[in-house]
Image (cartoon, rainbow, N blue to C red; front, side, top):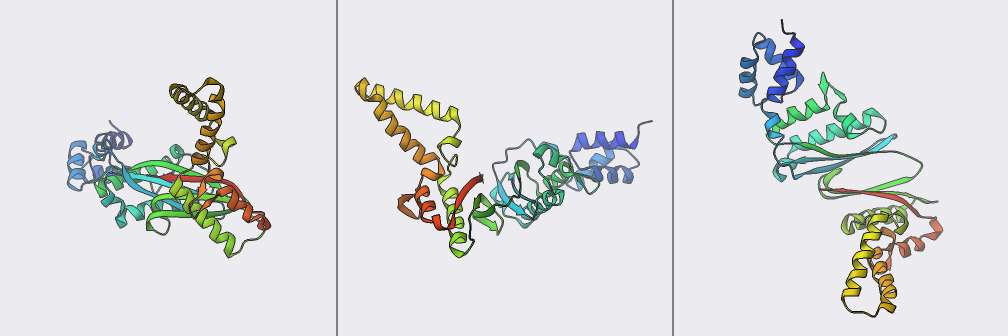
Length: 283
C-alpha cells in the first residue's frame, strides 16, 4: 500500500503545488491522485511547475537589515505589472523577514530549503507562482554579517522604501557621523547605482578583466598604425581611462564633474571617511 508521504511526493511532482496543498487535496479526495490533481487545478494551485519554465526577466530587489545581518534579495517575475503588485511586494518582504529571523549568513540553496510553515521556502515560492500566475525565481540572495562599519543604501525606481529595481549598499567608516557624512554616503550610493562600478579600486578589479582589456587596447593601437615605440605609452593612457570608468574611487563624481570619488573622500579627511566595500544588485 502506498504511503501518504509517497502520494504527496507524487502529487507535488505532477502539479508543482506546495506540500500542504497536496496533503489537503489528498485528504479531501480519499488519497486519489488524479482527483486531487483536478481539485488543485480548479483552485489554480496546480501546474506551477509548468509556469516555472517560463522566462522571468522582470521583478524587484529588496534590502532588509537588523542588528545581526543585512540582506539583499532579488526575485524575478515575468512582468513588471506583477512585480509592482502588493501581493508580490508582500511576498518579497516576507522573504526578507525570513532571512533576518535566520540571524546568520545563508546561501540561496539553503534558504530555499529553509523550513517555512509546514513546508519550506521552495514550497512557498510554488504557492506564490500559483497565486500570482507567473514564474517567480530567487535570482540572488546576499547576506552580510553586520560589522562595526556604517552602512548606507539607495533604492532606485522604488516600489517601497526598501524595494525597487536597483539597490546599492555602501560599507564605510568615519570618526564622526553627522548630517554631512550621512548625506555623502547617500550620494555615493546614488553614484554607484548610476555609474555601476565593477570594483572599489584597481587592485580589487578582476585580474583577467585587466589582462583582456590590455590585449584589446593594444591590438587596437597596433591596428591604428601607431609607431611601436609609443604603443606602451598610449596603452597606459587607455588603461587609465578604463580604470576611471570601472573602479569606484577613480570614477568622476556625478555631482561634481571636476572631481573623482577619491578626491571627494579626501575632502572629508577630517572625518577619516573611508570606503570599505560596496554592493550593487539590479534587474
